[in-house]
Length: 206
View 1 (cartoon, rainbow, N blue to C red):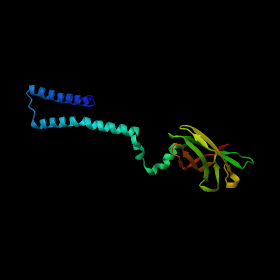
View 2: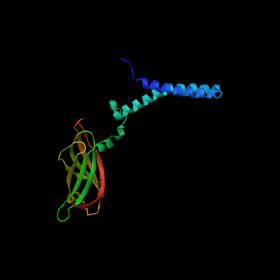
View 3: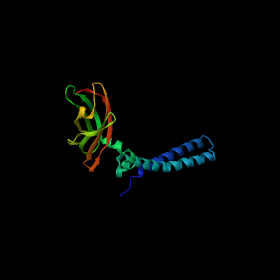
View 4: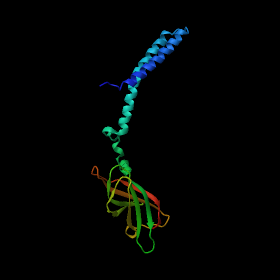
């Protein structure tokens, strides 16, 4: 079987050398004397042309391997310190709202919408409110309704906030700060993640 992979490279080398020889011959016909320094420059150019194509091929192959993530090269280069951001790249909060009920109802509501931005299917196990306005809750507000999310899918969870129990008074337009802790499982790797985030906005009518 004939090897043809090197033919394009050899053809380009021959064309480059032919171009250099053409220019040198044309200069000689016109009586232009080529100094020895220029001849050394020609030799250097020819040397570079012989190896430049090989270097270019190595660079192209390296870029292709990194782009295709062959052997998880891209993952191995990720910093372990960015694990929290990677968790929220997979499970992202795309919406939230504090709903003020008013009247005699002691429960306001906190609604959060999450989306699976990862490549694997995940199971959302629970969402906990651990802090409100930077005050740690003695009794967690929890929603443990599980949800299976395929890539790109969203889930909406509503958590009741007992304003009397937690000593919280919110009016429409008032600023709230809620710290949430999520618990979800990557079903492909069976790894459980528990990232936290703090959300701030203005309360609205429930």
